[in-house]
Image (cartoon, rainbow over the protein chains, first blue to last red):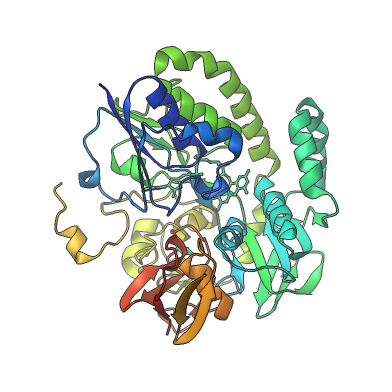
Length: 375
Length: 77
Ligand SMILES: Cc1cc2nc3c(=O)[nH]c(=O)nc-3n(C[C@H](O)[C@H](O)[C@H](O)COP(=O)(O)OP(=O)(O)OC[C@H]3O[C@@H](n4cnc5c(N)ncnc54)[C@H](O)[C@@H]3O)c2cc1C
Ligand code: FES
């Protein structure tokens, strides 16, 4: 019996685990969250997808994989490690009332009461609308949704949605009655307020701010898979450059579900889903083009703005360095506990540096965990 | 409901509440940065490490990835 290990229990990982179990593979599914469902569902898997929880799957939650030696033996590994938010440094972004957009949503899903709170949602991408709609349903006052993308691009994208009636309806329902403003972004945050391009100072309890999504490629890289343009390289069967390792997801939910199933079923049965995946990939590409970041955002970071939150490194300290490696060694930027996961993508955007490669362990671990590192 | 304390202050939270959400009910700040700034959660998903607290005497626990349990003692600087 083929032993398949799936890492990540979001839409892609759940679909992969289910498809693999359906095809008679012995499946183990690992995730570092307390519950399955990934960033979008967070333990609340919608009824129509609960069939993915096939009882034959061995599930382990609360397990974070940070080195190859931790992996149980497997014939096939499917990585479905998803995405994180992109944060761009601007004055005041380290204040406690400034959180990620998905970040604040995750905290509310984790039990933070939000009713009556005044919230500005800002940054870029379809996630802003989803978060604003969710927080509003939970009783928050959404003062404004500031989208950096220019109005003509948003308008053209929305007009094109008539070809996807389900998505158009979803966008209309999410957006109904929200103050959604393109051509706007945070210039600075101060305790209890944010200053937005074109809208001035807005007092608020929280600023929920994210500039799009970054693929979590670290584990794939650690296992030797090739990464290009911030994505893990895969063939049509979702196979990475390492023959027994597959990568699925980190796109829209539709695409992630399809990629997960293609990886889980394997080449023969998976082929039937290739056309549907191509359509989902094309839609994701339109989203990327629509919400491409404008160059002005790079000038939000002032010399004194902290870029590395772990080591409190100001942007000024980075200037003399030509690449991330040099900046890391001289300033400790990216050397703290997040291991450059927050400042790496930010500096890639600000300085055009490619993200530096990772070394095991992926996350700093307690010494006692390190002692049984075998590789 | 789950009883616990945040910096000695008693609090009860519904089951399924993360430690980070419990702390935020009481205060916005979770840790001090290396230069002494007050910091709180950013990513909500276990990546940024800004939400670290001391949990039952163990320092540096990522509060956004942990669920509250009865009797937990959470402390922040
Ligand atoms: C914070 C956030 C909030 C989002 N909210 C929404 C939303 O409301 N609506 C929407 O349409 N889209 C949302 N998205 C986008 C959504 O995540 C994608 O559209 C899609 O669901 C991706 O699915 P996935 O299975 O590829 O990844 P994910 O859902 O991200 O799942 C990946 C899983 O892998 C786990 N993992 C990662 N690395 C490791 C490791 N080393 N060891 C163990 N486990 C690991 C993660 O904890 C996570 O549970 C959000 C994205 C983010 C980052
Ligand atoms: S809020 Fe980022 S790790 Fe917990």
